[in-house]
Image (cartoon, rainbow, N blue to C red; front, top):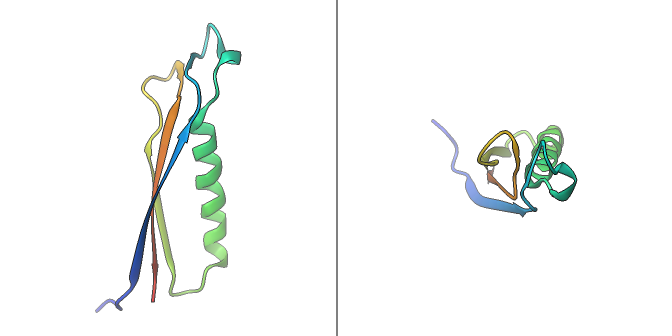
Length: 82
């Protein structure tokens, strides 16, 4: 049996500027880099949460092609607390 928890769903969207990663990387602003930083930092934050709190997340969108600096990325998180 699982305890009843309140759930907050959070979507975080990052917008950058697309650019070709080989030809003009200096013209891009990488939205995926921002999402990865947030994801990693939230993963570290989980160590500080109370034992009955839950934080689960995914990188929902992170680009279209490996050689294109992504202009958009999105994280989705669920935070559950008693």
